[in-house]
Image 1 (cartoon, rainbow, N blue to C red):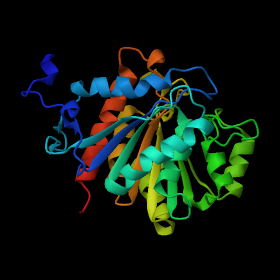
Image 2: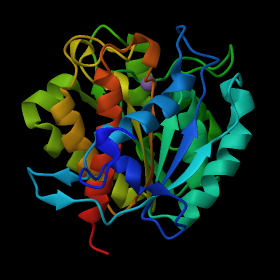
Image 3: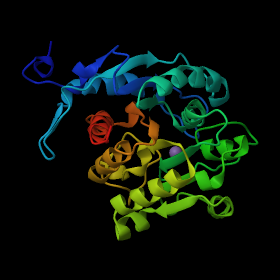
Length: 301
Ligand SMILES: [Mn+2]
């Protein structure tokens, strides 16, 4: 036992268990095959679970104590070595019951190819669900060559998700094509660049996006692609670029998202532990879970 795991230092790790009445469910989606670049994203769920003993249950800034919360840990879906197409059905099947039982379900990727399954798990018909992405990329690459981590939003549009049920925040310059931007405009996707986030403030941008989705949708699914964070501040995301979000902004965004009543499921994708340095990105991912719980605690039940 390490010093972090004793009762004098309550950590998020101590909240993991099998309480079916838990406010939040956690499930690992270790998908790596079908990535634009080589990665070890399948190792991320294990690395994130391990780092949770270093994340305290107490936020001294807001005086929120999470020690009374619990997380139902559903383990990992057995999709290691599966492509996004092969992993789709097992992921939907595993995530769906969690979404129906818990107010919030957190899916730990895995690369971004898991997002399509997460959205279907909230609503198979795709007509009551809205999708918010915090991502440096549109993920609107073509699907003609098959499903990859760079095209979950294209796949969802082709599945029948309406473009005005989609909002994308944190898009980076010189990291996306004009064709993708044109497609987003044609489909009436709400697009917020990093410049929009800086000029208007991230809180204002996220609130506007959630309000717009809320007007149109019963449920909201949020994809946190960790490559939205500045590359220098999060080395464990190979898709990240300079000029991205700070971790502090990312944490505030997470809490705000989780405090919204209609947000029923979220994912964290593209964390590649092999590229991480000194657990920088691992600790960001661990705190992401704490911020989700803090946001949940702010909901009006
Ligand atoms: Mn992405």
